[in-house]
Length: 265
Ligand code: LIP
Image (tube, rainbow, N blue to C red; front, side, top):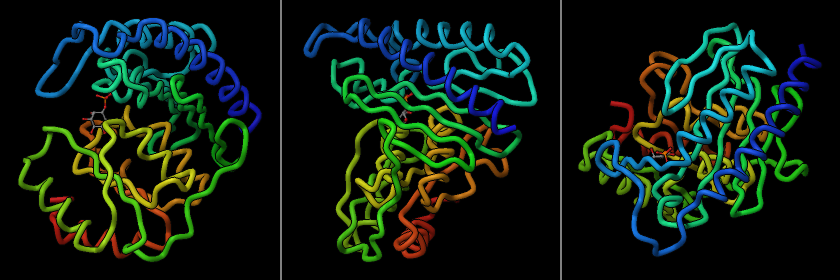
């Protein structure tokens, strides 16, 4: 299976790199008149979302016709024992304004096991990859979650969306900050999660996130030695779940603070 998986990782990396180039070519200029549309409150859709997802879906259908496919914009297109899951532009609110913090995220899962992930941030010149059992990498170099054990020294990103009540977000933020952590909010869940994998931050927590946002990052986090909440259990694959990814040394204290804030309620 590892040879077949490695071939899938190699092909996926080539497809995502080309997809990233297409997205860069379509990115609005900073300060340009907004051309993006709203799918819902603060939930943006650009021309690139559809074009990039279609490109990735078609390329995977040609390379691995037996595999399933699910995209943020088109849903469950194809079924198969292995399922590719794509967020064509993660961090769309940033992308739509010409900012750099966005990425193309492509993961492969089998039932509830993350098998591989490719996350390409073209404007940041970074590619994150991982294959189950074979390590996690940033631009081809091995990465590992941080060894931080003290939340008063930690950096924690708290993801936000209107998908959960604002009061609960405030409680979560307060719970994390009361532990002494410095808080970030970057607008791309996938990049916030790989920051944990590479050790640039010590945790990412969000009240609700979707499968396409995390499918690639779950494989990368697992291979980078991060602690990750059981996102794929329950209704995670179908309806999303909360997520906490953390350096092992701060995971317990942060999970306790998040629980107290009612993160999983
Ligand atoms: C984003 C997620 C992020 C969430 C944002 C948005 P998108 O995905 O990565 O976790 O907080 O609201 O959902 O919409 O940029 O693909």
